[in-house]
Image 1 (cartoon, rainbow, N blue to C red):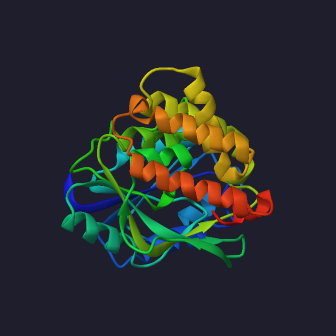
Image 2 (image 1 turned 30 degrees about the vertical axis):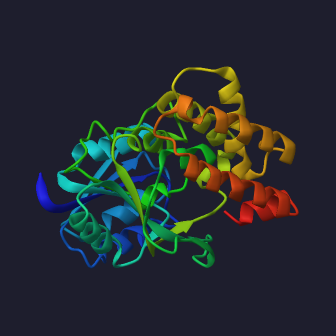
Length: 304
């Protein structure tokens, strides 16, 4: 394992509209110690031709038949040889300093297993829609995941000085929620951090997985929470947990949400001893404030 090398893994499928810009943003990183592993998962458009046009010796391009995203992600991880593995999607854009900033932080904070960044949401044309960034660096607590996903998968960099490839293997039982399932596993195993800096452009368009599989993602996310973070299999707990989790999409009533929050509060430590009351109360307060003061579902969604 090369102690300075960062393996950037990029699964690709039918991304001809955006792949050029995505790969260029990686090739132009100020951090040069990269291997760029790109697996084309059986694209049927012009994606592969675009990928073959790149002349960068750091690129390792594999083209094969379609096997799906989870299989492709795990193949990319298996091929990597660096001490760090950075995620990247085929339709997003990295700012030039992204990898350098993340590696520097990990080298100065050796207890961090996974590190994310702040981001801008961009549309199909690359125009900024919104942003998501904290005021200062923070760590993700396990209880936060009950309220939704606080991190953005393609901004992740994994520290293999603390984790193994087996630790970050994606579970094929959680299609379209493979990333969230991974966070629910790792949050109890290592420290997960988020840099307070926008280093990524996350593209939102009609064909993105988040857009096309929203309902399925929410349902399987609750299954991931139950599998990895809850002690026991109480149906009442899972019922109220579903109410709380779905509320980051504005899906439940004020009364149902309040009842669910109170019930989970009194069962918090029974669910998981690593859940903290302080973080739970803060997240619950913010959730109820959104529900009470948001005029409609769309305004709730825009605030995410």
